[in-house]
Length: 74
Image 1: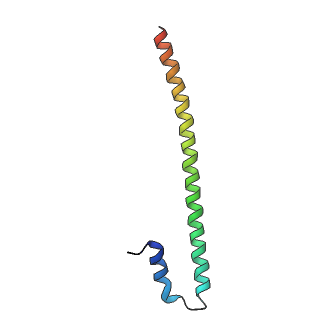
Image 2: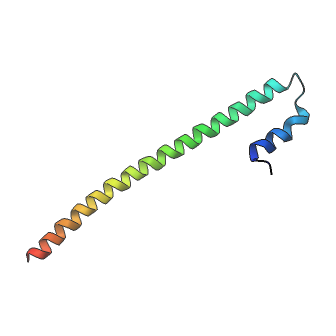
Image 3: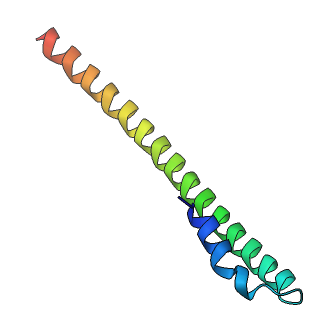
């Protein structure tokens, strides 16, 4: 079974004559770079969200500890 990239390349092989091949390779390379940039941005957004979640969890944990302490002191 072919991967998606292999299917794309295989799909274009009949159209890749000597003069068109460099152009197709450049387009394919640009396409892959744009996907890589998108995936990198998505990973950065996930990392930022994880950091925000960690900070919120830490603040919430401190609030729980504080309220529990006050409750036990009554």
